[in-house]
Length: 422
Image (cartoon, rainbow, N blue to C red; front, side, top):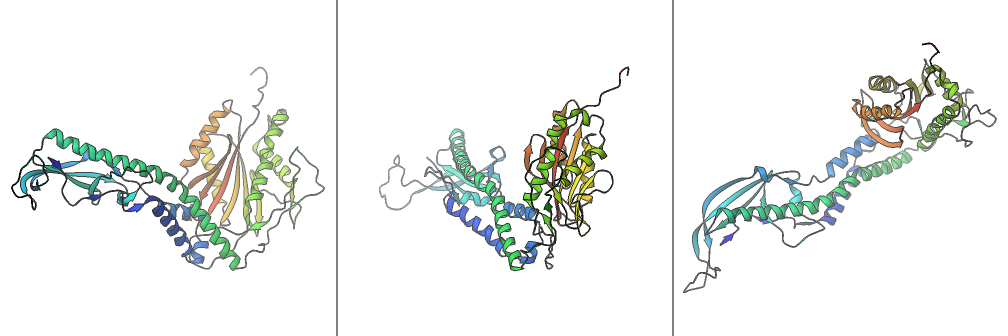
């Protein structure tokens, strides 16, 4: 006879998955709602959302059968229900000395996972004692053989893995949803806090469309009025101080204007064969100012140095554009450093325009994608806009909660024509 003994309990049966999942989501929301208002406003939304997603995710356990340890001991076993044995008096237990094999099965992950009942089940839950990083169970009997012990252990392990597989399927969708839930909750509460602070009114930054401009290039005819919105925060519990930012809608329109230069280059390749960085920057600057004008001056977009395209408010950058020819991953990452050094407001938006005369333009795109996440202040890719454009989030080198959104746009510039005879 082979049976089980020891301080074991049924696994995967104490908490319904759906009820547990919903409880954890409510706890996440409550954690955001209970934060100090100024602390919340002064904390990076992306970093805080990642923190809460990590805090409330379920790290489903994984067992490691290759590292299990077994031990053997004598044990008293009740054989009163053994039909192969005869007793004159059938009342009460009948004990004989048998053998128990104790199994220590290591695992990693959250041990709470062994308590949760997956949405899929077979009503044949395995049993074990859950310790810190160890599952303990025993195989016992009065006629033990190595083959039978091995079979019982493998059956138990197989059942545990089956239930963990079901739990993994449930937890995967749940874990993937947490960052979006946290971001939505943080944004919603920040909006309320800002309304409570009466910060709905504009912060003094305004851009207006031109109505009589001459179009230098063929560009979209849509004109936008750029409006300020509320700032993103720094990590502090001190009273929140508002700063103007560029709205996402207006940022997208600026990027669209820049992207239209691809069509211009394709339609007039000869005009761009010998062009340098400063001249390219001027082309973009003219097109941008052909769409928008400032209140105090005729131009909204200006430049400092050779390659900068800037929008400034109160002497600080709110939008940054950098034009660079591709020289390799190092030069590209140096450009990211340069843009980050311009960070002024808590939330600044930027565009890095990379021009390549390489014949293998696809190889340049691959290198941009591969090298960007290696930057020490890279946070995440927000989205891939196209096969040659990506939007990323970076943190300031001295304060990770001061963030800059950088959209990288790569352009395939016509190759220079070499003079004859060379």
